[in-house]
Image 1 (tube, rainbow, N blue to C red):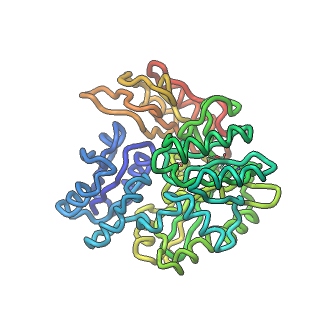
Image 2: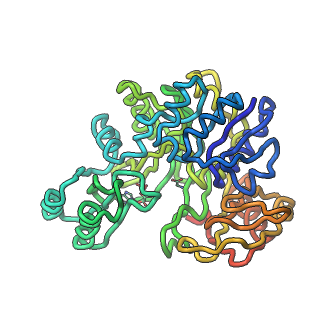
Length: 420
Ligand code: AMP
Ligand code: GLY
């Protein structure tokens, strides 16, 4: 089979690595890919942007692609699944309407309220005066969320009521968050540890993956600015079988059933960002795809053929395929470029990947490119160093051994991944 894999981050390198292990896969075209997918087994890059749906459709038709797998949310938000389905091309990922679980926080909040799925109380506003009136009668400072896709920057946790009002004003009156901020959620602030619960979904049935926890802050002890994710580990020690069963029954099951009943069946990866509050697990957000770096952490734990799982989802027969996961743990450490998450340095030569692999680590590349026979940095998050082990300590030890084998100027990473 010829696969088309859309995206160019560490998540996509991990997907390509896992899909290439399937005996049925002959080649994988990655659009646009990165330095890792340029040289991976069975894999080549094609110079088409992940958001360029017409060009992706043309490519899939001309090359008779057998299955397309979508990594990031932007093409899903643009309706790539609808367009491929209309053209008779199999694609793994939700339709535009189903992807609203991620792309519209207003849609997703209303949906959860309608289906009694546990989540923070919120109002949805487009009018600044209404927002101001609502906030005047709140006792606690709320969380402010831009409803639309904002590249991970649309959720703000102000410290004071005045700060909350300023954020709402920036969104509704000052256009600081673009179209994404023209609808705002004012949500109660919840407390508790966070766990990500991901599931393969075939529109009706689902199969849970091992839970993951990510580290969003730049520096150790959760200091410094938010990032796209500096590392992750799986499974979360907090995710007891009882808790997972509760989340399956109260969140994942009702979400898929509710979407199906609304004529918007969800097929793809459903990712529930959960907060374990004193009142029980509550949904913070849904994503409609694998997380990055969660995918790099979770996929090495999958023993089954990923292709067979994805095809079962696309064909609506997930009941026939039971994904098998290895016991043990996995951890991913992100190596970032100098300056990240602000303006970052590029073009630094990367060495030591072979040595990291020899030490037992997996190296999933993100912001890299191959320039002749050199591998150079080309993004903020440059590499993901992942390892599995029988226990978390072993996975972490191997991952950090891999990290220490790799060099590029300005490289930095957190030294406390897995310590929460
Ligand atoms: P989201 O993109 O919705 O997951 O939000 C990003 C981060 O903001 C989450 O991972 C939480 O740490 C935090 N967050 C979101 N909603 C809330 C809430 N209602 N209460 C407290 N923290 C929240
Ligand atoms: N790591 C969080 C995300 O992919 O959205």
